[in-house]
Image (cartoon, rainbow, N blue to C red; front, side):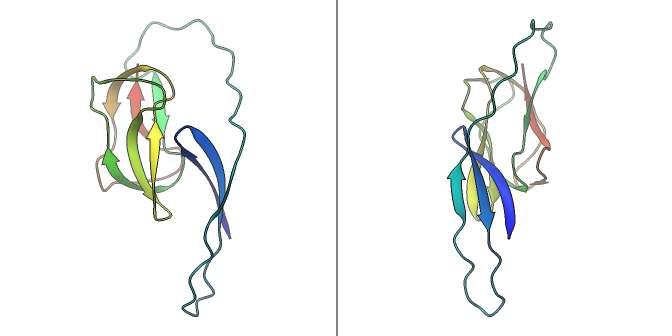
Length: 122
């Protein structure tokens, strides 16, 4: 079994995927249970706006399926920036807060790992 944490529409899920027996039998469907969102750290005084001060990172390994936002676009918290294809699902990677997209670091078809920076925001 492999365990992953995925974020869908701002909700984090722990997902366990069972491997098939290798005898042609289909693998069991993923089991997902919502988990509590991590508590936000207290906000410090905002530094002067630096290009790409906020990193938007991949929450699971996968392949870039679609880039939803453009550099210079204003987005709201929860808006999809990039959509990943992982575990035969489309998983949106969303803006953590309101802001402007400063850079997109990936293109459709790129393979990414958990924690890779996909985009940056101001």
